[in-house]
Amino acid sequence: MTMELLKLYRTGDGNFIQHDGGSYRVPEPGWDALIAHSDLRSYLLSVATSANRVADLTGARILAPIGTQEVWAAGVTYFRSRDARMAESKDAGGGDFYDRVYSAERPELFFKATASRVAAPGEPVRIRSDARWSVPEPELTLVIDPRGKIIGYTIGNDMSSRDIEGENPLYLPQAKVYDRSCALGPCILIASDPPPASTAIRLEIERRGNIEFSGATTLAQLKRKPTVLVDYLYRDNVFRSGAYLMTGTGVVPPETFTLAAGDQIRITIDPIGTLENTVVQGGL
Ligand code: DO4
Ligand code: MG
Image (cartoon, rainbow, N blue to C red; front, side, top):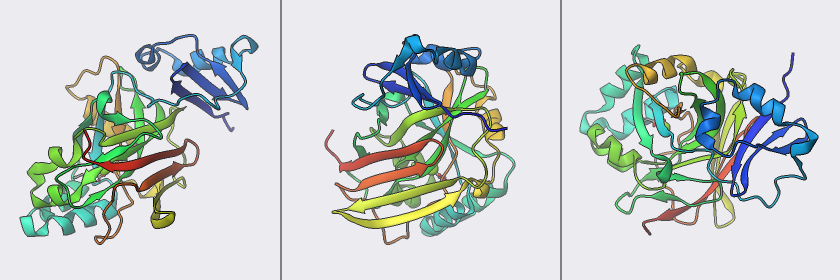
């Protein structure tokens, strides 16, 4: 049985859904109230009536689909990420940690961003002013309600400073958490099951009109089950407005590549859409 896609957007003009070829205004204006809803899918489907129908969302300013939730991230969940981290940190003696965490029962989970640090689709993401080697990380991102249930999926960009992370694994929070180090969007695909394993996560980086890097992975390469990642995140943690959890990257550009100001980053996960951001450095 195929289920019609149900997508939830947060815009400058309120919240909207797209469903079965139509766009509809969501009467509930509060994002946190939606994420905490006891049956969000049924509520949103009940909104798809002629009374709420709008022409389309063209012209609406799409905001990051987040309220007051924290964004967390899982690391080293793809073999490609394990390899890249081991290489970048071998001089610092960190390589072994990444190998161990890849096969350990407990996943690596780290705090990524408050909502105020998150860039919306079309907004700039930042590379740190003191970083020399920076990359985007395209990641399927779980949207989790306060009860620990996965209610949807969005696209996340876990911007990372690889030179800082590689110098010493204890610098991870500085390599990962800074203003606009995270982008989310363009919408939330409302679904309890993840997209099929064959789903591609594509990354494209454009520089002065040329594609400087493109790469892809599929969800089949993700080593950890989303529900297990959520189980660890919610263990001994209360998230009153729910939480977002990025599931790790399986696309890592070669070591010779670093992001530069002006680059356009495009991340596509087909059932959800494309998240696009321009890069700036410094400029706070
Ligand atoms: O362990 C460092 C971060 C890993 C990460 O962000 C990823 O694998 O996506
Ligand atoms: Mg990551």
